[in-house]
Image (cartoon, rainbow, N blue to C red):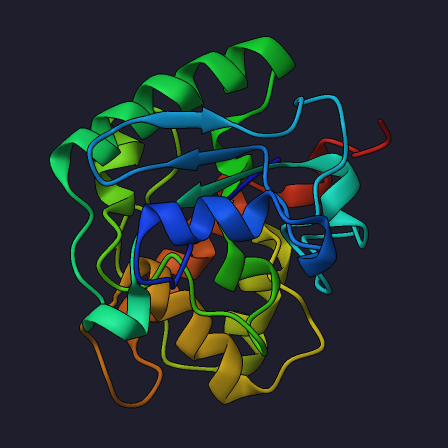
Length: 212
């Protein structure tokens, strides 16, 4: 898998210092600056400490099965600023190479908030997932006619896609919308249902067993 993060620090330099400090016990394979400079910090075949507690489908040890990419972005410190064009272009270039090298399917490019919805909200609402999907570097759901809102069916589809099953209804809906409907509030609706159903049907997470 590939897990995308934001640094939530004041500057790229501060994030780089923290990621290279062994005392912090935090690391990532890559850090991309706002200007598009890519820092390669950990070899891809090695385990980095970027994901923490969480899961995606049946995979509990995400750190050992993923490449972690940190995007320099202040997050809450800077009012969740957008991700600049040079940074997004660099990310697309890097993702293209990583997915090819490791034969990673595009649906396995996920947010930190996807696998750890009780703890994390990065890369956040300003991140352009639809842009990545247009480049076949992630996925975006089709929206057909949705069934009446039902949390049981919504949860089943989200779980099929990969979301953890051990979170409450509100937390699951919030994590799903953070990635796919960032500006939508309120109760579960037919669009949520349609999007989740499409993702679970087309991209079932455990159809490809993660064993390596």
